[in-house]
Image 1 (cartoon, rainbow, N blue to C red):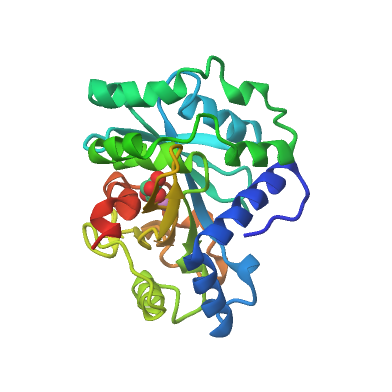
Image 2 (cartoon, helix red, strand yellow):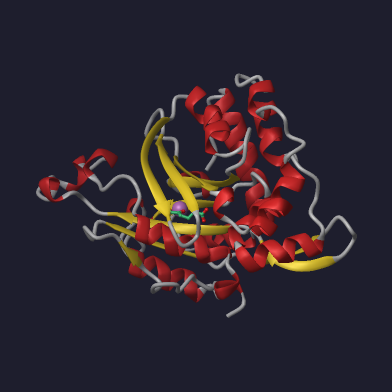
Length: 301
Ligand code: OOG
Ligand code: NI
């Protein structure tokens, strides 16, 4: 994805994506192979279905803080999702125009964790005494781009990271990876024949030697059968902790989504189909499994 209207939104989305594709090798591996096979001319032609962020649900952070950035730039808050086992809240946000990706934003419900883990998280976040988004100039795309990549809390120690990992893999991911782009999502239905079903696309990705998340099966299918999703297993990155200790931990990943045509539009000619005719939104049971793309059960197997 690359946006070129030079609006603040374009600027910070491009900055997020730039870092993401530098750090997540699967992005370029997949893009280069799509170009080599003549499926797309360049990365910019790939349609980005959505991007995702993770946050901590503590005072001054969490969704209520983070979403201000996107609401300011014309995103609209849509459905709420709750993940009981993982102790997460999430919302999705519809973009200001079709060319921009949807946003999937989640937060850890910190006060449902054990006192010990809550105490570790608060040790890092309690010094934040005001909403950091409130001190940003939301019309300055450069400043927002830097905000996503800066650290709002100190680097964790390895001992704290491991303690979090044992109880909430999501907590451990956020404490180290903060507001980095968690994944971007290739709209598979927008590709050419031969690549535009998730079955075909997954086969293509696996042929590149990339491992897919198999929690609940490789293809996650919504109850109405109209939203199909798959994702890569996050690659491991060598992390250096506050005490200088190192450990291999999960970074970000890539997702693929196929949004099928809604039954009432089944007879429309292919050339007339737009996003408005396809399944929108997300699906709790699919998302629940996609989160596990950064979880040890996937990264270690
Ligand atoms: C988000 C997982 C859910 C989707 O499309 O349902 C998701 C995450 O891993 O933070 O991306
Ligand atoms: Ni996703």
